[in-house]
Length: 371
Ligand SMILES: Cc1ncc(COP(=O)(O)O)c(C=O)c1O
Image (tube, rainbow, N blue to C red; front, side):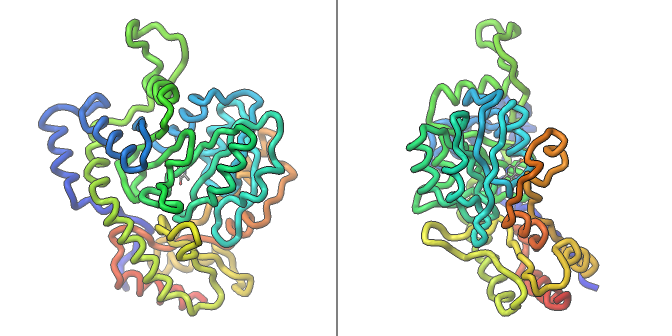
């Protein structure tokens, strides 16, 4: 029997070891080492933003971004229902209310046509989340944000190296966030980044990341922050990975192309769009949606594939269907049918940077067997 094909594996064969050895040799292993600022500078330059604030993961980056914007009790943030819990969790933790919109069925990103009708006097921001490799349709988001004076929080966790009409994703937000979990194009093991052009927001994020210690009187606090710091060890990995971002994007695009060639004649599944008129897919993951003609759902399909040694992951489960939010009295009577269908019919197949053509062929063959 062929060996298990994992859903993701990072590629760490560049300068990672060399830079990690440097951390050990010099003793710079905490957040005070030089790789942290190097990673911040290089990553923010790559996205074209003035300030980068490295943090310990992509989830807390969103908490800090919301806090830095001063969004809190009773404020509303318009955001997609089809995303990771981190986004809505950060909003509710801040005391604010997530106001949800459904997905575009073709790109799986938030349906920007729903945003304007959700605006109320309490709306403070639009949170966009670029999902699975294609960006959100930003023209509409920017237009609406400008018209109503709303902030844009851009969660580009899955969107390293992506462009929207020649402008990097992560460069649209008043504040943008990234994750460097090992399934991302650039990984630091665990890690995240906040980007902004606004010096005040950057200072605020730096302070929030570091327990709001004060420069002059370190242990006297005017405000409460968190320890969200990234270590020099993590940043060392990040610097080595960032050197290869273009190569990684190209590997993923080749993966996307190859999978599409292998799978496009299977009539009962929907495949990710290779491109739109504003972006080319970077295939953070290669998602598949089962059409109605398939007599089983994504959960069953994933079970069948696991039995055949193929790793998979389910699509996100929508925020309006999360028990934790129902218990908080949120979203009880909401329905967002596109996201509900994606959650039940969608999953992704092995999509890591180490995946070989031979493995992709095996995945395709096993997919054929289960249909
Ligand atoms: C869109 C999105 N936002 C935020 C996160 C959270 O990032 P982290 O896992 O680094 O906390 C992820 C993680 O996959 C994500 O996909």
